[in-house]
Length: 160
Image (tube, rainbow, N blue to C red; front, side, top):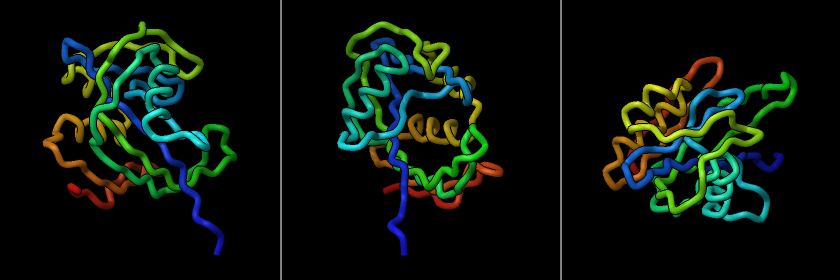
């Protein structure tokens, strides 16, 4: 049996001093909270702070784990060829500590949103569900298994 392959990714819901949250507009997915894949040899916190800085220009402090998510569906990447394996994503709440809003190769816009308006701006069902877990966070992280293709479907949801 071959070794299992998972992509490990991190996401950060960043709050500013006014209680607004940071969203970035991506080339493929509309408005999302920043994050991305953990690179080889990189720890989760450093990966998250790097991704947020790269995508938005904002420096952050990572506060606490909100949720762990498994996208167990396999699907084809935007190139129509590459098969994407299971993803394991860890979402954290973060606090903005500096930097200036900017865009990147991956983002066309970055902006602070009031919390309720952020939920309205996010259209991808998986990202909306994960953002809702942040809004509902009461101190216990959530775990969720879902697939995003052909349709978004939650397979398992629980607190941990």
